[in-house]
Image 1: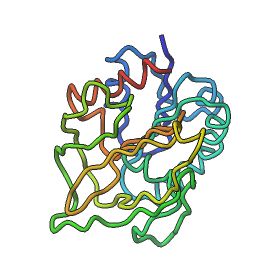
Image 2 (image 1 turned 60 degrees about the horizontal axis):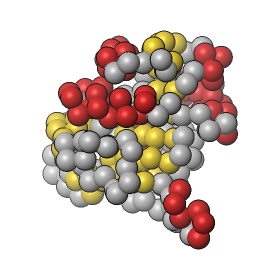
Image 3 (image 1 turned 180 degrees about the vertical axis):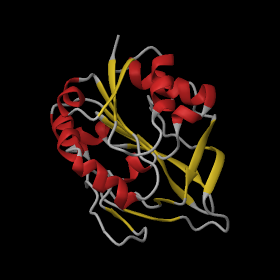
Length: 212
């Protein structure tokens, strides 16, 4: 049985994530303990609210070092909602205490261009061919709650022998296209909440857990 740590760094209610991961067969620990987060088979990084506040909390718990160390060893990480956004370089979200993102991917989180914001509800996604995260749920809807997102994927795709490992980017639309998920080797992330997305979200989490 795969052991997953849901990283508890003070970012909102994470118990729904724990229950969803247990439902799909993972052994789950909710903790901010750095050692356990490093040793687990998978690390689930939640995030709700303000980008900059989440990053401040993550840094206070040594989260960036934990994430970077795991990725350096090829150990899986799944970021969700603002836990996805912090993996980019920064955010345009207003704050009195600006924080730089982790920079795992280039790009800036920006306010959605829709007439109605926040984007709150169920939306279809457009996964790429070869996706593993969305296997079996490519045409399903997932639950979003957000006002900001990455709207341009600016990473240059690798060529030659490395083209096969190019990040797989999933898109959704709310007043314009935005990045809904990314699969990039051991690092995956979703802008939506799989733990609140019913059977489709559980299937996605099961795909992730089975690959650990």
